[in-house]
Image (cartoon, rainbow, N blue to C red; front, side, top):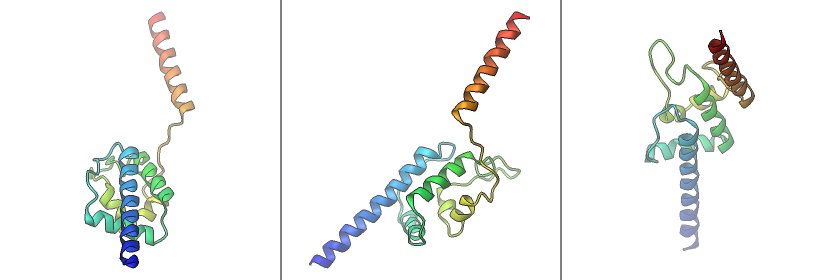
Length: 129
């Protein structure tokens, strides 16, 4: 009775954790194909990574690294690109977290604003010359 209900509640909670991971991937990894479904394989893989001690914060960091790393986005000689299923394979999450695929590009708002100001300045000077 109670043991079965408790197990079902844990399974629902674990499944909702997996759905949160998928949603996080879709919101951060906008250069990658969307993960449309939490398949049984993805659910098992996410639960496996969680059982290895990876947290939601680790997944978020890995997704940000993936999004910011040209090689993983497909900017390589083979045109290969990572995806969620690749990241969830044993060993790949830790490799991404350790930046084994190159340093991620990060554009802060300050540098973005500086670049925009430079572009406007160049455009203005181009018109004045």
